[in-house]
Length: 249
Ligand code: UDP
Image (tube, rainbow, N blue to C red; front, top):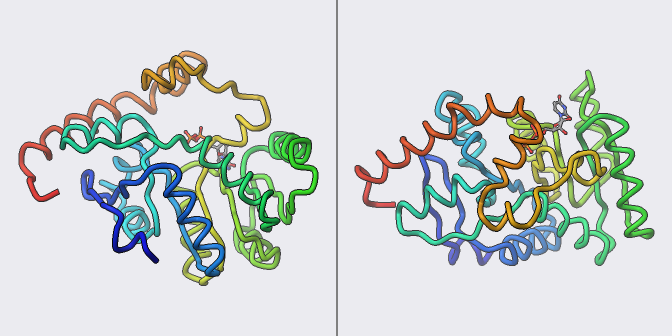
């Protein structure tokens, strides 16, 4: 595909980040669907990169995905340290755009993740907005039999899968589908369904524009604090050290 040749890439702490804007990322998804590709997109953030440092299997998944789009202001800052200007692509916005893409093109859409009432409310909201959308699979993220879920997703012949199981669970499941060569654009969407259901409020635009979405989420959900500290400061320190030692980025 064209992006393999033209898209710039960077590595942040040995994780590949593809330098693209949201429109290019959506075009990649669109092309992959039309070409019946098995296509894994990761909305990569500092937490995932830090996790990959101690989990080589996860690092392998990240570096073998098809597209790693930078979510999280931390990745944007890490790239800025290298003088690479990169737009932050918000996972929630990207997922919204994929739903719209599915609706416009009548692509088969699958939703996996979150608690039962949340995924059902998400389904309801999506159907309210796109009454004719081709929703072929909806499953909460609290299941016992992963093999069955994988088989059901394959049987649904979904062309777009949004998997919101949290990381690394969502990426691991998608990796299995990709190894089976399941022709689908598959994206790990974290807590998106909590937002789409209306249960979790999105950060106001002012926070988003200032790159302070993490602060808003932490203030509204203080238990997230332990996910940010010490991970985020350590991430930034490691990036600064890497920046001083590695030139061929
Ligand atoms: N989740 C799930 N199954 C699990 C664990 C988590 O479906 O076994 C869901 C959880 O309900 C939430 C999402 O995964 O909707 C994780 O959200 P989180 O806030 O961790 O993701 P982030 O947006 O920070 O990537």
